[in-house]
Image (cartoon, rainbow, N blue to C red; front, top):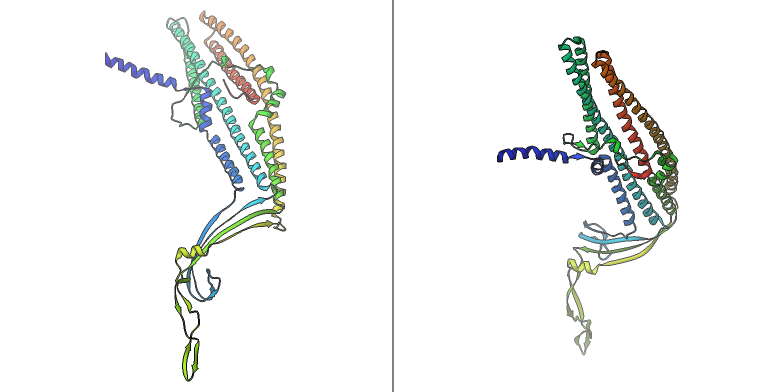
Length: 475
């Protein structure tokens, strides 16, 4: 009994786990936001823009650099510790800490930082645009998957009907009530239906592969979507999706339009920064340094001497003459390393004014380039707005057309169903040939498949309009 229970659990648990693995549209979109390669590339560009902003901020911070050098000096040269000419060969080492800070530059650094900040916001908007595009693609293929799945179900119903007709006809053929040709025709129809089922399943699997690619998912990973009834997918009334109204909302909400506005503002700040480069700038500087050489000497001691200044002769006797104060003579030795570093410590501080006079036209050309960039960005914005408006009006026209096709296909299914029901009754009493019955059955199948395609196409076109309205993608 325990083994049986374990066996049942082994069958139930995987089935439960598989059911939990079904993906809804929201889960697909969220997964794509985290893993889609295009989204990741847009995020990398945003991080690059963030580094540019950080650099613009760091440019306002005072600079500092430290350096040291070590070398051999020989021949006639200047002693680095005494600044006197010498011919003594010596080893030397120097240290230097120096830096500076921009005090006033006519707003060049400030406007460069503002431009970088606006460009970063535009990069974030680009990320959102990429996410929206990916979400729209995911929704498109999600609906195609739902349609393909329902096509499989429709074809399976068709096969079941054909199989029932085949079984009934076989009984009548065996009884001699119908010719064997009727049975052969139904066998051919069953083969056609089986081929249609294989095609529908292949279409479904191909769409699954495309969806996995959009999600950047392993192609071998198990993946199954939820199948909400298409008739229960909420749609806004077409009256609330008028193209002029949707366009006005899209201009204010779509990330592409936000990015264009931000880049134009950033370009205006870059023009101000480029103009500032034509003006003088005031900066401060400082420097700290010290040096050492292995031949430097300094007093290490002293001794007192009192040498005679001369002699005098008094009454024929010579006497030595000494000064009243004896002399102090220093003794020298090599100066210690850290003593030299401390004794030779030097400092400087000052102001520097830089006046651009001629720099091969670099600054003026940079200003003209920034102006042309602004002009190009404005044209890009106009083109993007024009494209957005065209897309919205086209989407509205497509939605109207899809709605009309869907309504027409519904009427076609109704008439095809009636025709098939009548044909079935006539066939059952022997008043209709098998070929005519198959023709009516195929007409019904095509009508159902066309209605299904039109229904999902209509839903998607409406969802595109809702997307432009700023409501995102939802089923």
